[in-house]
Image (cartoon, rainbow, N blue to C red; front, side):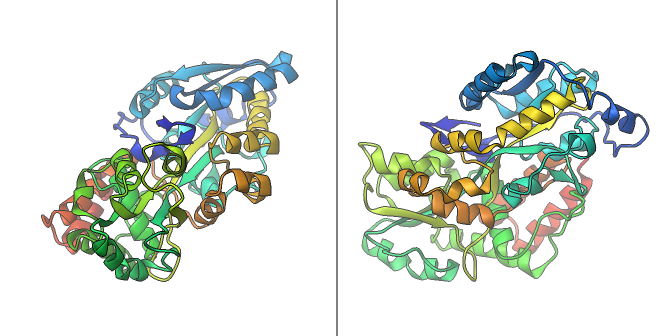
Length: 422
């Protein structure tokens, strides 16, 4: 995951590559015995995380080590690319190694690692109180009804809008579409978002599907749930907006960066993007929208929509010998002081109460909108077969956008591809 300035770009841009599975397991037998081992173990541990965001954890680890010299945490930096991070962890865990006692997983990877029996369930002696955390973040760390990781930080896309052209955020998707006349009068695009054929397209598609009341897979993470009027309506809204240029057709080549360039350059009235764009729009000397924009939650047919979640989940290696220390460290990461520190570094926290801090809201004016977006957010499909699922979403959504498939055919083919995922 990339960081721009101090702002988290999250998992949206990560290109996830499939890794050969060692075979999914659902626990029982040796798995239960392994989960019971080491739960009272105390001592030094190693925490692995992608190097792009370790700057946020270094001061946290330094403070922990100062306070707990007998239970020091050693930070192990993984590669910056999501697929390389995943490969390293998988290769280690397939040998039943405890070299990494804990690791930060992309929200989309948690179910895959859990299904393979590599994660310690967060229950019993390793239970952590997550009642104060953002619900959607906890959902992203839950597989088959069991919590397998502790959310560390989160993220959600926001609707950016030009206040000089649209003084108030549109109340719903229909109002947004109707307001496009103001953009036409200003000779700019109405809206841009990420429709290039990569992970960002999965984010866009799931935001529309979820906002219209549909879903991609069931609670088991494997059964397609695409044959519904709500899902069909959500994908239709996205495709129709693209074909009518409500969402500028050039967006089919846009990642987050092109989206930011278009909005900061004053070339679009609306944009869906992550919070990192806020500071750039407000302070970048080349920004054409300073003082003339605001943010709100993304929109759905009847009001606020459901943004797609980003962020990291911290997991305990089932093979760790010092799980009691890992549990205590993961609890420390979600403590008020640490989470406030994340917020001040624009690393969106998972502790819900942080967003209510008035001083923080003044320093980061987008915090209120981000909290509202997170309260209504949905994780991407929680599935052990995420690489195959995201490919199915991207391929078929793109085909529908480019008029290569009808909406019904795209959903049928998406469903078939998900059923074949393994």
